[in-house]
Image 1 (cartoon, rainbow, N blue to C red):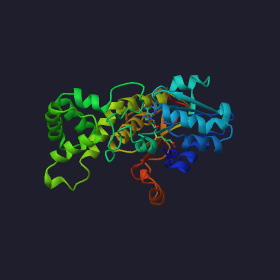
Image 2: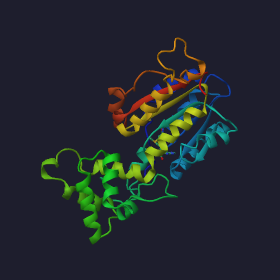
Image 3: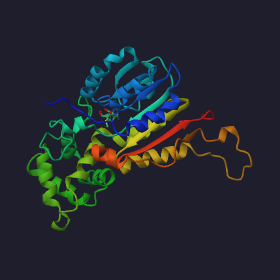
Image 4: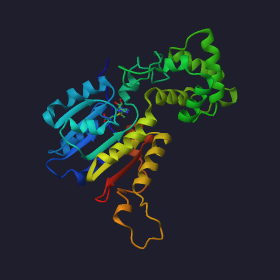
Length: 316
Ligand SMILES: C[S@@+](CC[C@H](N)C(=O)[O-])C[C@H]1O[C@@H](n2cnc3c(N)ncnc32)[C@H](O)[C@@H]1O
């Protein structure tokens, strides 16, 4: 196999957003989505006194990142976990709060390229889709066990798939004949179930594969928890940076950031008591995108939405 690669998205923008909060000799950053360590390596290079605690649930990614970042000695600590466990990860560096936290959501190019993991609908592979292959149910388990109603729910809620009932019905009918355990089989079922008039409106498997991946890995529920835990784990003045790649993720981040940066005081109060002031402020309003130049070099950057928030002294 070729050496796995992943080009970090919005790298300079992330480093610039962290720069004001990493001036301290003792700064610590949690990279909750270590992947191959691209963002972490750049953070360790640019901020020579910072320590990075890198979390990944994928043991293969963690092993490769550990090798790549071993040159930084004790300034890098790799942790096998999910990114909602930020406090536990910080404890491995004997810390209780972080100056910076980065979440670069989704899967890495390496995971897509690993043809035996089942993430890519274009390559025939066992329908696994677990980021952490040491635990949990696979996509094939879901296709075997979920009833039609639950399949419709995940295709609709996690894939925003208009043909969810049609696809779920086709899967339930097919699995009575033969188990659906490989991606090529699933793609064929979805293709056959797609009305001719819609055959040209995007690949029929795209949204169903996204939905299965989100369900297999519990991605949205972990993300909601992770944002809350990350906000609590920030030191005063610390910043949380999130890169998301589809609207379901970005909506969760946007809503959580809006709530954290809004005062709970009634509008009628002439002076807002400290306890009711917002505990966080948005580092910039809205979400930033990648430039056309970056997208031309890295197609993965095309869908990125970047948001950042900072903890204020008033945070509870
Ligand atoms: C987009 S990649 C990160 C790439 C990384 N920033 C780099 O530059 O190499 C996302 C990584 O996060 C990991 N990941 C996704 N969800 C996770 C979760 N809930 N907890 C921990 N790691 C997760 C994936 O296994 C993947 O390696």
